[in-house]
Structure formats: structure tokens, C-alpha cells
Amino acid sequence: MDATQHDADERFRAEIRGWLEENLAGRFAALRGRGGSGREHEDFEARLEWNRHMAAAGWTCVAWPVEHGGRGLSIAQQVIFHEEYARADAPARVNHLGEELLGPTLIAHGTPEQRARFLPGIVAVEELWCQGYSEPGRAPTSPPCRPRRTASATSGRSRGRRCGPLSPSTRTGAS
Image 1 (spheres, rainbow, N blue to C red):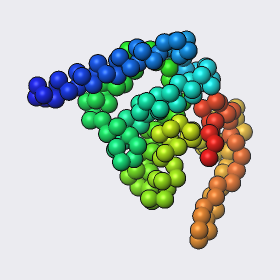
Image 2 (image 1 turned 90 degrees about the vertical axis):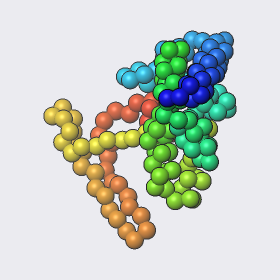
Image 3 (image 1 turned 30 degrees about the vertical axis):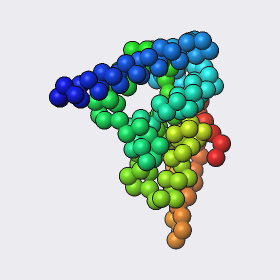
């Protein structure tokens, strides 16, 4: 890495560190360390408000290209963002699957219509996404789940039943 890039990365580090210090105060101060794996239910509504606050300031979808609503950060700056987010003990994000899985998939493989429909809602944290798993006969203590997929010329539909408990991470926003 050359000195110019290093200087730019350090300016970026100072920017995100300062923003987090300034904004994880007041009404959001109590959210430090909240949420996370196995604790997705903690302060969900307040964390949703925090994520929307981040979106309003342009701090969601930071890895996405600018033309799709992101910041277009370099890999080094993405690492810096996540380092500083962790250093600040910022709360777990509520839409990481939309931001880090669905959005990039649509950017790479979606139609222009799909991108126009879904990406703005993900960036604004107005639509939340989850990923459901089902495995037939998944555990001896759980009833077997046998979803079926039927296809037609225009669409495919999954039929079956819910195989396990729903958590707050399965919530969806308005469409």
C-alpha cells in the first residue's frame, strides 16, 4: 500500500470513528453491545431505528457500488468500517442478510427491475430480509419438514410448513 492510500484509509477511519462516537450517544447509547448471534431479539425496534439512522447518513450497504446506493468502499475501507463498528461496540445490524447476501446477489445477477424494486428498500432499511432453512427430517426432536417446489412457466412456488421457531430476525418491513 502506498502512502497516499494509507493516508486516505486513515482519514476514512477517523471519519467513521468520529461518526460512531457522535451518534452512539444520547438516544442510541444504550444500544452498545445489543443484539448479536443468539440475541437477535434484544432491543429490536431500537436497533431498527439505529439502522435507519445509519442509512440516513449513508452508512448502510457500504460495500455496494455507488450506482446501487452504496458507498463503493475499497476492501481495506470495508475492513476499517467493520473494525471501527466493533471497536465502538455498536449494536448488531438488523438487515445484514439483505445488505450482505440478497443485495449483492441482485447487483450481480438480478434484472434491472429487481434491482429497482428491492435495492432502495434494503439501503434505507425499509425492507428487512431473512433466510429460511428447511431440511427434511432435520432433527429427531423436530417434526420432519418436507417442502415441495412446484414450477410453472412463469414462477415457482414452495409449499410446505414452518419447521422451527421464528425469531425476530425473520421479521419483514413494509413493501
